[in-house]
Amino acid sequence: MWTCSLASVDKAEAFRISPSDTNYFAILFDPLKTDTANIFVIEIFNVGGATPPNSHARAQEFFYVLHGEGVALSAGQEVPLRKGDALLLNVGSEHVVRNTGATRLYTLTVMTPDEDFARLIRSGERVSLDAEDLRVLKGDA
Image (cartoon, rainbow, N blue to C red; front, side, top):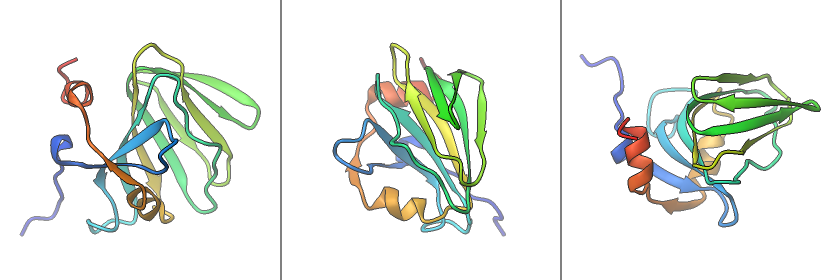
């Protein structure tokens, strides 16, 4: 019996929550399609893009930078983010992640627990990963 799940980025469903957002998500695993309480996405920030200020009442949010550069802002502090950096935001901390680099910023983003983030993402507009996204995420960049 298979006891794990497998995802491929080139088959991932991708969404932008709002048409004006400058970041979008490729869903790897979420509670709406997989037996998990968490959500695992590749979050992609366009050049100059950022999350809106947000916080999570019950969830921690984790970002691992796969490619690009940015900053995280929380509690009046700003920390730089570069490839290989990991950021963990505690429950309730209002935060913004912003791309400050010359290329797209790619992060593995995990919310534990999901806190309906999957529904929010899936309620947005469907988008496609382009050739640049696939090249970076498959390690060809």
